[in-house]
Image (cartoon, one colour):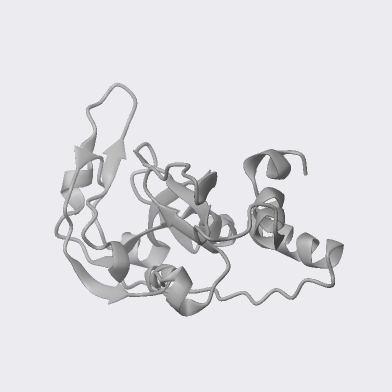
Length: 192
């Protein structure tokens, strides 16, 4: 992803700074975990004194081609409620909102039959034929091109997810944390 590429560039630009990256889909407390910053995802993140939105990522509803082969064609989100759903456990309480031009938004509450605490596992389960999953668009690109997965309801869009960085309130204003936050800020990413 562009963010990982930016972190790699940062580590090469500042080789004296030791980076320890913990890629986890489980939300952890920055202070008790001993983290300097956290890069998190969520709906409608706001900039605050200790956080900054850095970009948004698109999401899609996907399923494997083999799973869809035995299913009827659908045109509305409500038609998917009794299908097999796979969900990210941490956000299972969030109802997906589907949007389509010149239509009212549709909110559904599907009941998943498989849960995982790892977003990549959710996608891999769906890609393997276990059911429908809402995943980050960037995870699906290669498999879409290869015909392994398909977008379900391709004319409908899901709300994007905000990616934001947050840090402890007592962090030095012009310290190393600030240096990294500025490096991954939207202005810097757009100038790459």
